[in-house]
Length: 275
Image (tube, rainbow, N blue to C red; front, side, top):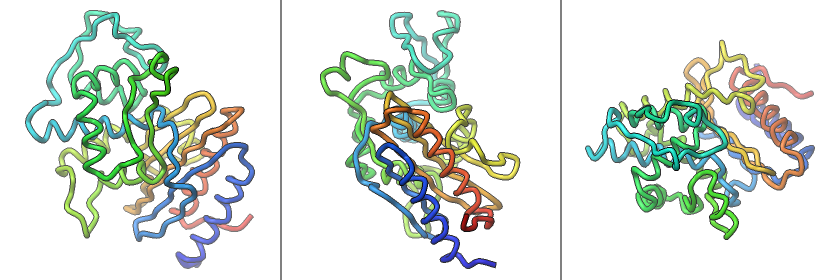
């Protein structure tokens, strides 16, 4: 049976082979439950795309824990505030009202941009960015709403990096040497939302989801493909964040993330080997 160090070395070499074959700038963090860690360009700031929805969700849960919001609070969305791109709200009856829990779930599991913009309105920009600062996420910042092309045209862009997406995911389980940022109830609810992800065409694509569990969030823009998540197998956990930009063809980035996801599955199951 291979030892952990041997498995990690194989993972390192095989992930590097994927990176070397990818025509784009790849940043990643992979960290297992024992603290073994692989990374490349983890602090390079990139366009966050829909990964910014993770700290938005977390900022909302801090307000819920403070008693300022409740998951059952209901909100309506004016027709002029319906955003394009990913999501289902544009196809729903205009009179539909949404519980905050609905908005957060739609924001994550189908990456609904209208839901995201409504949550930003509910929280306010400063509150989201203050949460990031409090958690030491210095490269992560909310600068514009989803599908706001005017803001993007003048250089406003939501930003993050691979390390900070991994750090966000770490907040969802208790580390022995750190005081939890969230209550167990909040952590479990957020993990449940992330675990309900419907966009499974990147990290989970080649995984056997009958054996492996993943709670993840994707992001994409022209030239940008991201995915990050917590992979679980028989109680073992691995954090993965892969951010790729400068892609001429988005399918190249997507395929690289799929291949890294498969390698992570093999690593956590103990089946990884040299090719």
